[in-house]
Length: 225
Image (cartoon, rainbow, N blue to C red; front, side, top):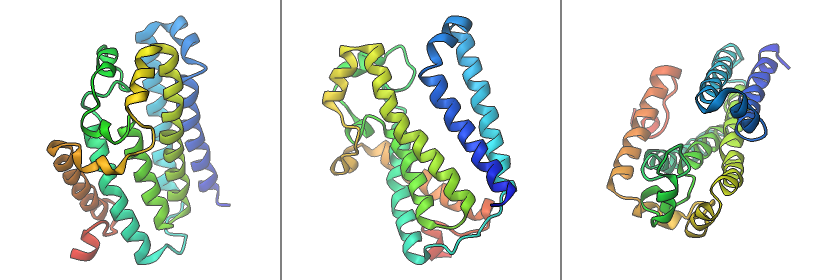
């Protein structure tokens, strides 16, 4: 295998592994040693350093080295990325999975917006984005990076549930009873106008930027161009 691919594998393992380690087994000892603010700074620094490694390793790895999945793959990818962006857009409102002092209060409320679909809308947004790119079967570097991001999001969401259960006890247990890890797709069009509109704008903008950044027409622009 190309040396650049091995470097990309190492970068993705470092990015995903450091996230899991700092979010779970290393979190308590790091907070004890550094304090909450120090831990947050260390977490951010390590995460950005690993992400930078992934970015530059991705650029250095060979691209377009797989046969691709043809028109069917582009249709699947286009369809998947729309709900991914809707969930991502709606994930910032009333979400107790995010770091917020209002988390316990939010778990007592009825789920609204994207939280009607899943209690992890951000993670599922990233996960669907990753699956959409794997469906294209375009390059080894994309498959490796998308797989890593998908694992980080969807396995990370499960691990986050366990962590929140330990930290928040009954409050998170109540939230789990009212929500679902797996998306309830029948609720997608009940998330509200703002996530639907914002998600559609993100979907179109991301597809347009794909042509600008990668010189590959993506999404609806593949057929409108």
